[in-house]
Structures are given as C-alpha cells and as structure tokens.
Length: 278
Length: 282
Image (cartoon, rainbow over all chains, first blue to last red; front, side, top):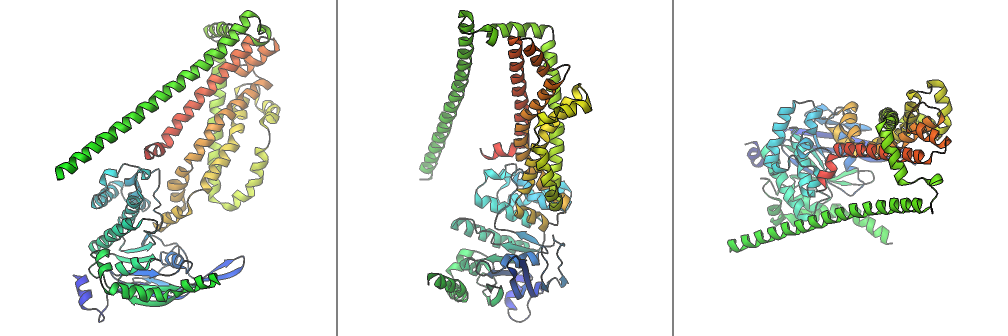
C-alpha cells in the first residue's frame, strides 16, 4: 500500500525519514597526525527506501556505517534515527551485515541464525521458531544442523542475511555484503534480498563499489569521493521501484544512463590511475 | 527426454556412490596395512633384542631382555606394586594436568579483558615460564613434603605456562569483525567473552593440552626422582640404584603406556570440543 503511494506521490510528499546523517565528520588520530575520514556528510534514508552508497575504496564508507550503527562516535555532526540521536554504545537498533559472512564455525546453521536473538536474551524456543521460519523461506532448512564449513559461499551469505533479518529491525545496514561472491551467485542473492526487503518492508542502506549492483537495486545512490569522504552527488534511480529483479533492472534502457553518470562521478578512481601511470 | 535426463542423472549418482565406496575401501585397506607394519616393526625390534640376549651378543646385565621384563611385569602386576606405582604417578599427572590447564587457561583467557594488565604481566609470565621445572623441585618438595602433593604441584607448574600462553594467544586471534558483529547486536563484553572468545580458543586449548599431558608427566616423574615414597619414577630410581635393569626398563615401558593412555584421553576431549571441525570437513 505504502509502496504504491510512494510511486504515485513521487516528488511531492516523500515518506518519512528513518535515518538522517547531518553534517557528520570523523577524524582519526594516527602516528602521522590527524586523518580526516569523513567531512560534512549529509544523507537521508526514507521509510522502505533502498539507498546505495558508492565510492572508491578508502572513502570512509565503512566508518560512516559504524557511526550510523552506533559503534563509533562522530567527531562532529549527528545521526538521527526516527528523529532521535544515535550514540555510540547503543547498538542493536539496526541490522548490520558485513562483507565477510562471519558465520561462527562451531555453531550450527540454526545456532548461527539465532545468535543475535540469543544476545538480546530472547527466549530460545521463540528464537528457534523464528530462525526456522527464515530457513524455510530461504530453502536452507535441511542444513539447519550442519556446520558452516559444509556450505558454499552463497549459502553462507544467505545465512548471514537471515541472521540480520531475523532480528526484526526494520533498518538494515549492508556493507558490501555480496562482494566476495561470484557473479551469478551475487545476482541471485541481490534478487533474494530485494524480495525480502519488499515483503518485510525494510529500509536498507547498502554500501557497494559495484556501480552495476547499485543501479540495479537502489532507489537512490549517494556517490562519495575520497580523501576525506564527502557526498559528491545524489542520484535518484528508481529503476527497480517494484523491487522485482535486478536482472530486469539491468535490461532497462535507463540503466546505462545511470551507470555512465555514476561512473563519471567516480572519476577519482581514473585520476588515480592516471597519476600512477605517470 | 526428461526420462533420459533422469536416467543419466541416476547413473551418475550410482557412479559417484561406487567411486566413494572404492575410495573408502582403499582407505580402510591402507589403515589396516599401517597397523600391520607397526606391529611388524615392534615384533622385529623385540625379537632381535631377545635373540641377541639369548645368544649373548647383547649383555643382559646392561640391557636386560624382553622376556626378563615380561616375567618381571607379570610378577609385579600380580603383587600389585606396578599398578600401584602407575596409579600414583597417573594420579599426580592427571591432577597436575587438570589444575595447570584450568588455572593457565583461566588466566590466559582472563587477560583478554584488559590489554593493560596483559602487557604488564607479559614479562613476569615469560620470566616464570623460562624457569626449568627441575630447578623448582627441591623448593617445592621442602614446601609440600615428599608425598603426592609436591608432585601434583610440580606437574601443575609444568603445564600452567603453556596453557596460559596458548589460551591468551587464542583469545587474541578472535576475528575482530566477529566481535564487531556481536556488538552490533548489542552484546556486552561478558557475552562476547562467553559466546566467542572462549569457544574460539578451544582449538588452542586442545593444542596446549596435547603438549601438557607430556609436560605434566615429566613434572610428576621429576618430583619422584628428587624425593618420593611411591610412583613409577620412584620404582625406576630405586631399581637404577640397584642396577636392576629389567625393572628400570619395566618402569620406562609403564610410563610409556601411561603417557599413551593419557594422550588418548586428550584425543577424546578434542573430538568433543572440536566436533564441528570433523563434521564440517566431510
């Protein structure tokens, strides 16, 4: 219902902001002096929106996520979630998925999915039931008592995704979650993710340096430049408004327009390459 | 068409199953062969020794003979003195091993809590660890007497440093991203410690335990050599003083068997703690 409203009301009344990053800067003290990782970052993720953040490596994307997740304090500026400021130390309000699947090798698949619920001291029977429901949804139920070593990379990353979704937080941060997968597996997981996000009405912030991935799944893309990380541009995509398939999005003629535009914004990378060549 | 595909698939499946069976059979055959060759070497070695002793080319005064050792073993098992010696040494070793492993592992993992304390203690741990246990022997026997207690302490001291260093290393090796993941779920430091740090150190703890069974036995036997009333070390010491070579050898073989049994017990512990490793690799 609300998704339809959103597409109709495009440009007029936007859905409410869930995550607001307001002029966030972050500096780190190192032996060589202070290094600024982020400078005056502003971004907004609205309800049930799929927001991608692309940028060259070293532009402080992961630092930004650590600040949003409340694992790190910004040097200045603030992050608001549903209007209230986030402080470091108050973690657990958002789902956080990283590039490495980080499955715990001595826990079974089922126990890996329930780890977060266990930490939040949810009753184990309920946690098990929730986890099993997700395992069924992802077709991995028969592996529930296997150990992670028995699973392929794609299956492991699916388990990591379930572990994030089962927590029930409706804001999810994903830091290059599919980076280590081969191309077909990655596209399959993108499709899975889009379906889940649509069905479960989640708000997603997604870091990637794969422009294709960003354009095929995102509603909007923030382009960061590096040294220190700043927002270079915001591009509204909405190719995949209905969140059906990242393959269909790739077939859309507008796909290449967005792709080329973002690529040009990321010229930092090519500049670097030129410098290196000289 | 689909039938053909299915047939081909099932054909492949049976092929695969057959291949797996062939590999399994080959592996089983090899492990039988390993046992046979192991037995053969032992028979050959003891046979040559016995033959040498009987023909006089090996001095029985200096080297004894397998039949002498065997006869002695029978007698000593019958009168209970050998088993009692093994019991005393085994008890000293096991208690010392458990105490040393538990204390060392607890301190080693505990140091994970504070980098500062770990850095302060580092030099003292190294200093204590570099003392040869033999050098501590007289002191500990003066403090704890000639009974079983002093040997338990020596066995404990022999294991504690290795257990500590391994546990500390294991705790340091925990994936930082895994800790970050748990923190993103809102985990407290205690939860991180119990859910990740302790279980991920199991591999290191087991590696330490494998070494420490041997070290504990050395500690116990050293204690018995310095001053004791019973134990396999005591039997060997007295037999040596009396030039009773077969009894010395019997003591040594008994220690060997004891060490073997204890190592197997650690193997059981390993299979239990690291179950996921063997299951996962299949």
